[in-house]
Image (cartoon, rainbow over the protein chains, first blue to last red):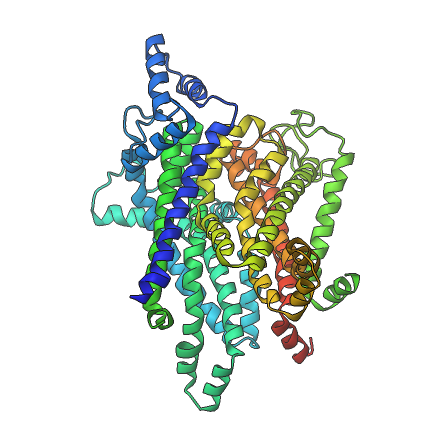
Length: 336
Length: 287
């Protein structure tokens, strides 16, 4: 029960705080700027959509928008109204795909982003940590240094530039992979093998670009972690005790390095999500990122807000889950 | 300071590489002051010309000279990175110093806020912000906005350092000799954490430039100001790759790779230099 008090409750408080800060920022931003969001939304809607709107329709839209953005009443009242909308997951209708609710549009593109992010994260975490662990353990070897230099030149490249390089290389110069999108044009989304294979083929490049940058980061941090662990006394002692090398490497060195890497996963997930968003834009992959881009070009305020708020909640939850399963891997927390 | 710099330049190839590249890029950025063309005006040179002696890196579809535009882009990117890094380093360092020194409830509160900002997915919020500020988005405003999300990393690191400094002999001496918190923190502790602050400063520049590229690609910055990001944005808008105007697309890509790798090498080499364990290893290996 002590785990609950010393570990789980602080994490839960942290979780609520993350959501609170994130939501509050999204609430304050539009109110700090001198631009009237309602008017600018209507302007954008009429200029981008190109559709003519009746004055009465504009007036009613103005009212619904005002209510939706919670611009009625005092600032405190507005703030509470904002939270009420959140708890009911009600972000109103999308302005560019009127009258489909924002929640529905996001729910449709969420699985795409989820699978792309989930698989590339897991793959890069595992490969990066294993390679990094080996490279840290055999730090004097030549291949370890070569790998480190490669990782150091790949990791700092921004996701979008990395995606561009892959597009130029594998779509333009060597046309191995299909150009863009989530599946071939004209194909019906069904649960057939051919469709799934097509989806897979389209998601390979975006996944590779996420995985490449990801591996770089996990490799570098794991390498420095293990090279420090190798210098610890218990490793030296285990060496003198004549433990088999495999056991030493995986049971002693790597295992201790993995733990901070799980915490890092919880901390890095927000940044990786940012990367996934922009990678989707680069490959026009039909996930939340492309949706966000569409909402920008269409001036779709509701959609943009829905995506911001939901991604804050989703990322905070993912990070909480990682933190909560951490004790399963670290006996020190369980028995504290 | 200069001794350390000389030492690093001589012993660490990473530092040498990073330092040289950044010096060249700074030189190019300064060169922008002598640019014969205004970076904001279009159609000042013939369109879509491949690289030649007259136009070193060719010209783009907007009738701009890519070489001179790139020097402006570099200058603006430097300004952006430095603005974001300055603001966030100041906030992060102060928060880290105070949280580490005071400890207790204040530390817990500050660090919870700190960690919340780290976990927060900054891009959707930044998109949201830039969407409203698009008309007023100058380089400085953008740097200031980016720093909202970049200070916590530095804060966390500084705090970890101060936690160990706090228990050292000289802290007690200064407290007992009547120095108040601010004096102890800024006069006694700050000098110790400066190297970490520098490493973090560079990392923040890296992060800010990456974010700038991301936001520009989404079309959320002031697009007439040339930066690395807006150059990519326009090249994408005009389908430069598929029309075979490779010099337009390749310039910002290669530039950003060199820029980012060089900055990263600098920060790695500084933090390696800081870690006594790796320094010992290097001496052991005779490096």
